[in-house]
View: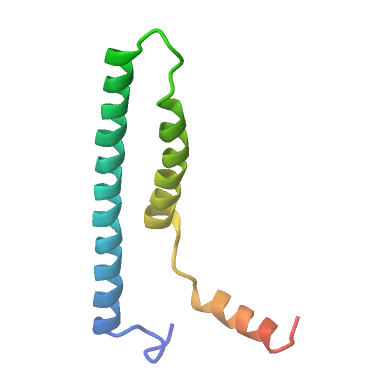
Length: 95
């Protein structure tokens, strides 16, 4: 990567702040998920312990959202300059 293509310190700082905010928000989301669903399990266990385990529905469906949030925060990578250039070429009608 040439000197002209390197991101500035300000750009790197902005990216780092964005990543740190996404991680902080994910941890808050995960904490709310665990506490809320633990409360539902306690309600189920004390009110109707022999009945169907109905907390499975919010656990599963909200859990999908938590997993997708984790994917976005920890597994999605920035696009490389090469991938960006290839996509721009495709949009211009190139193959």
